[in-house]
Every structure is written in structure tokens, then in C-alpha cells.
Length: 308
Image 1: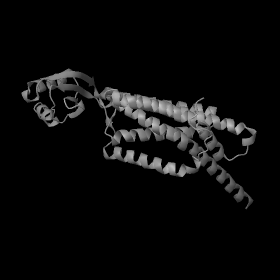
Image 2 (image 1 turned 90 degrees about the vertical axis):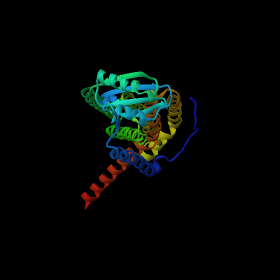
Image 3 (image 1 turned 120 degrees about the vertical axis):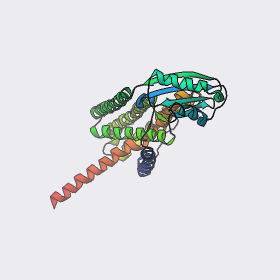
């Protein structure tokens, strides 16, 4: 097997306090952004309404488009440039073919805007948007529950809970990055988040498996859990980094060359690969070690109290 690191011996667990602080800072920044903005910026998949993609022959100012829509009482619509100063996405809160036709007629009649081409029209009713939000929560919840059961059965309940905490860490960092960069939460982004969950837990399971092997070795029996966990992470480090680099290169290419439609999806995946690798090395194992230290300290305190 290709080895990036030959016999690595980095003290990842020993630096876990710094890792906790870094994670807390990124999560606080992302959650703070979501709170200040009143939540995530939901795409039409979840919020409902009408999405219209238009393209003009020459660059057009957003204010000019808004002024035209204001004449048909749609001036409050969300208008975004879509990768080109001649192409825009228009999101209208109401849905229906009549709304799209009204927007098209208004833009066509405005001579100052020039010729316009309607490239895409999508409709999502408000009830459908709410149903999709619920289904998204169910999908994530059931996926996380299944992972918890699997890891608890294969390893132990502490490992399962630590892996779930690492997953929540990755998802929160990814959602915070979406909020900070004003990107949409859409169905493709949801697919990216589910992919991140699977990717993160896969790396964690590999490290847990090596930990179990190390525990069974005669020379390692009785060694502190921190030492065993650190050894497991170091022994699987080459595999973790190689996997991360392969996925990272793919998602980066998709982000830069996949087109505007796939940009948010690729962005979420790229952030998820980075934070998933980080949480495998620093978060999941560190939580298990601290939990074990806390449990041992509590048991020792009970013994002292019993003797007293």
C-alpha cells in the first residue's frame, strides 16, 4: 500500500485541547452567522416559489431588472447574478405558470434591457417545500441513528456517540460555511451533507478498527487509551490523507469547472472533506479518550469515598 507517512508518531491526542478550541471557534462563527441572518438561505426546493433563469444579450444591472419587475408588483423578488453579468436567477415567492409568464412579458417589453431569453423555469409549492424540509430532517436523522446503532454494536456505545459528535461537528462547520458565503441550502447541498456524513464515519470506523486490533496485541495490553488511540490514528494516517486528497481534488475540479448549478454542491463537499478528515484525526478519538478519563476519575472518586 502507498505510504505518505512512514512510521508517523504525531501526538494528535495530546493536542486535543487546541483542536476543541479551533472547532468551537469555527462552529460559533458559523452558528452566529446563521442566527444573524435568520437561518440558512433556503433554495426554492425548500422555500417554495418560482425560479426563473434569464439571459440578456448584454450586461444588465440588477436595479434595472428590479425596476422592471416592480411595475408588476414583483420588485421584492430575489435577483442574483448567475456566473455571468448577462445571466440572472429570479426567485419569486409565489408559484405558478402565470407568474413566470408575467415576468417574461415584463422583461420582454422593457426595451432598455434588450432581448431576453428564458433559460429555465421551476415551480415548487409552499407545501411541497415544507414536506421536503421534513423529509430532509428524517433522512439525516435516520442516517445518524443507523450509524450510531452500527458503531455501538461493532465497537461500543462510547465509540458510537463519539462518531455522532464528529458527524455533528462536520455538518455544523459545513452549514456555517454555507451561511458565511451566502450559499443556498438546496437538495443537491443536502445530498452533499449526507455524503459528508458517510465519508466522515467511514474514516472514523477505520481508526476504531485499528484501535481494536491494537488493544488485542499482547504488547499493547494495559497501555493507556490515549496511547492506543494515538497509535491507531497514526497507523491509518496515510490512508486517511490519501483518501481525503483524492476526494478533495475531485470536488475542487467540480467547484471550478462544474458550472454554477453544481457550485454550491461542490463547495459543501469540499468543506466536508476537509472537516471530515480533521474530525477523524482530532475529534472522534479525543472524545473517547476524554470520556474514558472522566469515567476512570469518577470511579476512582467513588472508591475513595467508599473507603472514607
